[in-house]
Image (tube, rainbow, N blue to C red; front, top):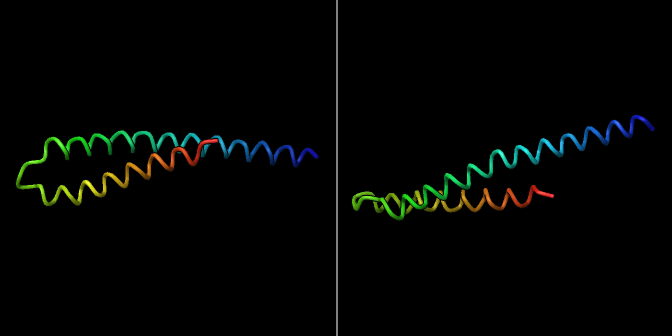
Amino acid sequence: MANITEDLKFVMLLDKITEFSSVLICVPGAVFNAMLIYLILKRTPLLMKSYSVYLMNFAFFDFATCIISFFSCQK
């Protein structure tokens, strides 16, 4: 019976580590991608407009992935 309790404690510890790593990765990722989207929309020079479309696409989907991942990992 003690072995089951120790296994459960280990699983709960892994769960906490996963939640912490999710917050540690997803929150800064969402913040920095939001800043990148703002900079692309407001500060892109005219010569870089065609390249900014690709960059905006990557930034938007990375932002969405961070938000969705953050909420899907929470309990």
